Each structure stands twice: as C-alpha cells, then as structure tokens.
Image (tube, rainbow, N blue to C red; front, side, top):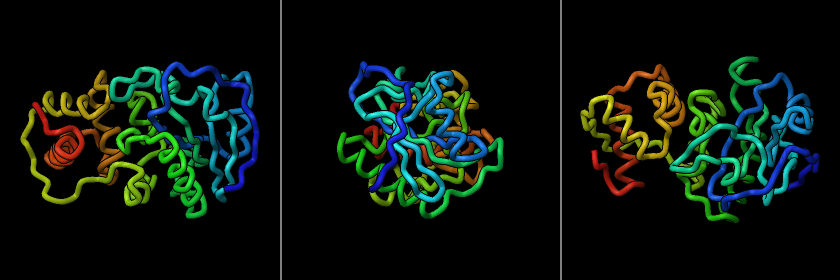
Length: 230
C-alpha cells in the first residue's frame, strides 16, 4: 500500500510488547482536520495510522513507538493499552457530527492494513478491538456501523456468534463477571454492556442485558476462554 508520511510529535517509548490493535473513528468534521489535530503537539494525541474515506493511508507514528490514542483504557488485564497496541484512526465524523457507514475504499485499506499488522505481530483476534471496547465509559468508536464481520471472515477479528446459541440464564451480576472474564472493564456495568452490544449485537445497543447477549457471551467464552466458570 502507498502511504503518506505525516509525523506526529505525540509519541513515547513502549513499556509492553505489541499484542493489541485498537480501531477508532476520528470523530471530527473532516479527515484533514483530524490529521492536523493528531499532528499538533498541543493536542497530546496521536495514532500510528489514519485511513481517509477515499482509502488514502497516512502514517503518523512509527509502529515501534507508543502512540497516544487509547487514553485511560483496559483490555484483558492490560491497563496501558497504548504501550501494548497499534492505533488506527478511521476518518468518520462520528456520532457527534453525522455518523455514517464506512466507504468500500476505506474498508479495503483498513482490512489490508489490519491484516499486515496482525500477521507481523501475531495478534490474537480477541485483541483486535474498538476504542469503545477498551474505554467503554468514554468512547463509542468505531461504532455500530463498522464492518467487523469483514475482518472476522479473514480471521482478523472475532466473529459474532450466530449458531447454536443457548441462554445460560445468568443473573446480571454473573453476566458482568463473564464480560470481565472475556476482557472488558466492568467498573460501569451498563457502559460495558453497551460496548459489548455495539461490538457483537450492533442492531440493539440499549444496554439491557437479555437472553441474546448472554447467549452470545457464553458462546465467546466457550470458543475462546475454555468455558465459563460462572
């Protein structure tokens, strides 16, 4: 892929090996504004890559460096997600400025970029996550319109379980413990539930724990965590 090098000064040294990939949307009114902000030392934020709506790829922080994209975050025991991850910003105005589907050219570049990163670092599909997964109390991106299934079909992300779903009938407290076991912070149970729904049941993200959510989470635990001890 061709890339434009537009370096950001907002980076540091990693303290952890790369085991995660975090996907964001820019949440600004234009891609140019987002890139300018990520390159501005006053912003104190950055990402390794930005993918514009036309598929153009901008490289802003070298992969060996720690970009400042995830903020206060948690995933599967990792509390410094910036040190453990590569961050990709995907140009989209987001929920504040007119959230819309991600164009084909953009998704094509995202898919190829993710594939290369996952192969290079051997990243577990469970660790290819959205910003909302690692920061559920603060973030909604890349949002319910992002095509996770496109990545999942290539083995680059966890697919949504759809077959042989069985509701284990957990009480809400047990569901949250299972959600924590899968990887989420449950410091705010409703926010964690919404983030889980946004990722695995995007057509209904009202934050209510129901039988379908329980069944999806049980399937994920059985597939990836060796079965629930709930």
